[in-house]
Image 1 (cartoon, one colour):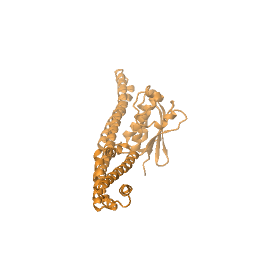
Image 2 (cartoon, rainbow, N blue to C red; image 1 turned 45 degrees about the horizontal axis):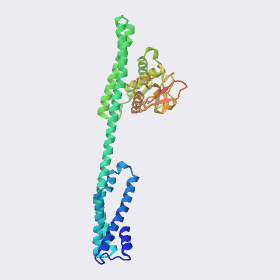
Image 3 (cartoon, helix red, strand yellow; image 1 turned 180 degrees about the vertical axis):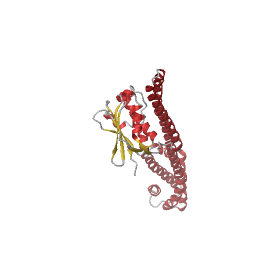
Image 4 (cartoon, rainbow, N blue to C red; image 1 turned 90 degrees about the horizontal axis):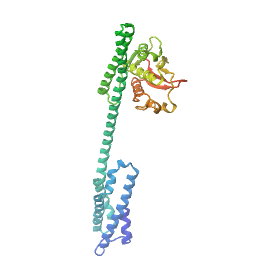
Length: 354
């Protein structure tokens, strides 16, 4: 509008007569006005592209450097100007140019830009879904390696113990080993069932079916599954019950006690206590070196291990991450609490209602 109004008055002076003489001066004025218009428009659009993220504005940037875009825009201005020239008055240029420019702008820029914005949004959502699927696949493979690998190693070890004891006729030593093998085999079966349910029901996260579960038998079984020199004392009131899927409780306890065995020589005690009327807390305590202060806020992150122990202790950095996911899926939480010595992980569970 400014180019259409000011340039002709600046070149032709006063109220311009576009068709004076042979009209050459009026045509030159139109060309100059079109150039001024294009420069101003280019600056405005370039500023818009510069202020936004480059990946969201690639199409607009390409338009601004396309000869066809500038030819089309110049054609709009010249067409409007030539029509205004028929009326030989500057104001008609503005009146005719406005709707022409709006129609052309909608066809050339606005509609394609809107379509590209929709396509970009769909592409972002597709990429997000692909990233979620990739992360889920990675977590699933890690869960298979970790949650099946640990009890499988226990099965192998205690199977050898049972075999040696049976060959020597020592049933008193063979029977506990066979029970540990059976318990870990059941745990592997539960993990596999959970993985199948996870894939079928909710590929974006863990699911659980919490139920009232007596804690003392599970705590004693988890402690007995550890090596003889690393079995903790268990303190739990008879009849204490919490809401959790039993297989998930076994997995979390196995992970916590297994970590204590690897990093601290074994847990020293497992203590389950009611916390008020609505919660139950299971604390797994060890007397090891503890969690470094600079690592405490990262201890539950997936595939995260402290550099001081990453090379010395085998692992994938998934145990605590999966354990906390299981706790959250059951309506509870897993936290690292302050301890005067060693480490103390607390599994917080909901207590059954009346």
